[in-house]
Image (tube, rainbow, N blue to C red; front, side, top):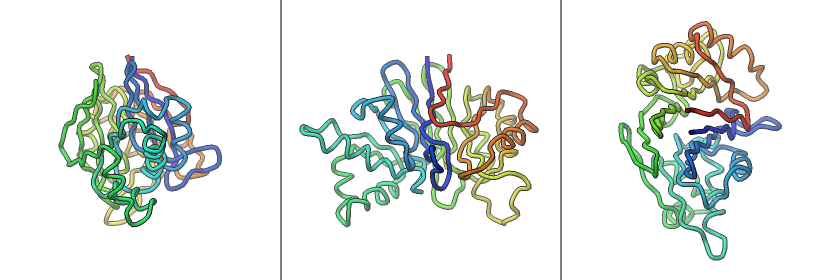
Length: 251
């Protein structure tokens, strides 16, 4: 059995009682994490000890997706004796952003004390029982979506993205599609779109023929129920609203 647990569902900053983007995927005794935004680390450590995290994949360098990586790094590197170095898979700018929290020498120290694996788009890496494929998606900064395959099941996660045909490619026939849905209709009319509406998330889920859709990355203090209604106009399958602590089992 594969289980995904929501560590955080807010975008931008965490509202009271919530955290920003983060997801734990478990398969047997192996686990990996997708993103570690504000407030996700305590929720992660309620589920698994720091030393048991097989790897962290970070979609992009915005703090609401990566800042708690610094805390997990410390939880692995600073005990006496330290645990094994934390494997981190991300674009290089994530390492610079998170490492800077530890001062000018922080990025080089983080790279030295973590097991850092720089990622590129359209790359597939094997981590224990997990196969993770990367897809570049449009955002304000470089962003990678992740397609995780384990036990014959697929979990697709966008990170943050604007409209792109590659969203449907990422999610194709996924058992669970975790998609940011930051805004509601009407769609913004900016010439450059870097976030999705819930309606667009539903449309991509339909085009990709996914089994289940999870909406996430809600702006703080939003009424979330209408997002589900918007997505349901395009996608007739099960729609889940991400909630801290919610666990979804896949078989």
